[in-house]
Length: 55
Image 1 (cartoon, rainbow, N blue to C red):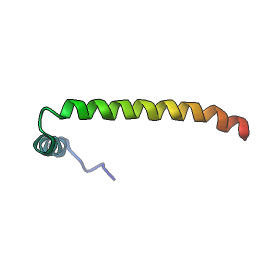
Image 2: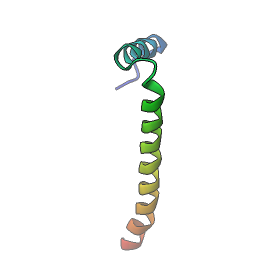
Image 3: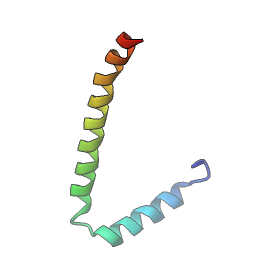
Image 4: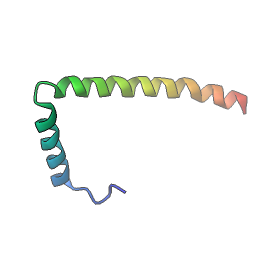
């Protein structure tokens, strides 16, 4: 689905994000996304052994 994206597409998306959110809010936005991904990974790791035991 995303195999047609090139480096230029990524630059355009980053430029639009910079215009929308501004340079001051981007670091806090990235930090929030990183923390959310860490929490998601922890939850997935906790669920995997319980699912294996139930089967």
